[in-house]
Length: 177
Image 1 (tube, rainbow, N blue to C red):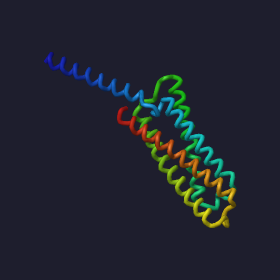
Image 2 (cartoon, helix red, strand yellow):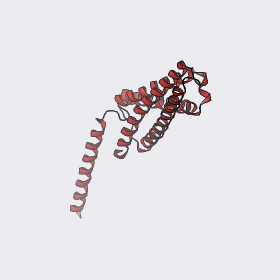
Image 3 (cartoon, helix red, strand yellow):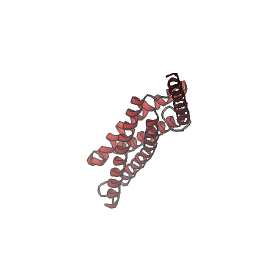
Image 4 (spheres, rainbow, N blue to C red):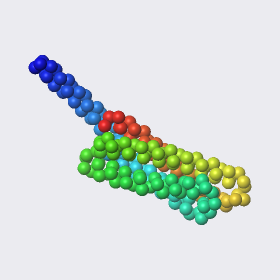
């Protein structure tokens, strides 16, 4: 009986050592939630989505096309999400205490994936409508407005790229928590 207790205690020590090594390996991965690279990704998402929203909103005719309204709505969701997580990442970097609670990580990973898919859909639909408007020889949209819409779509694609990077990294972190 004493031998079994020593064996199970030794196994627990080996498992906890492996868990410690896995967590230390995950701490060194840049871009995860609570790291300075993760903070940079969130700031980039916020800046690019704000720029996309700004370029789209400068043209008052964007209400005429549902793809443009969809982009404005999606960027309106991405901006507060990215700002909130940038504050969380910044706080985690300053305090040097990364967030590793499984429930919170699951919510963040799910939110990142949903917003990443929405951002890609909005960027693609906006780019296709802008391309269609350019092909109509400017009869539906002035060149100045169309170029703003094109810049907005480009900023949305950059937002999606950074959002996808955050989503992939947080998905990678999820099983280890």
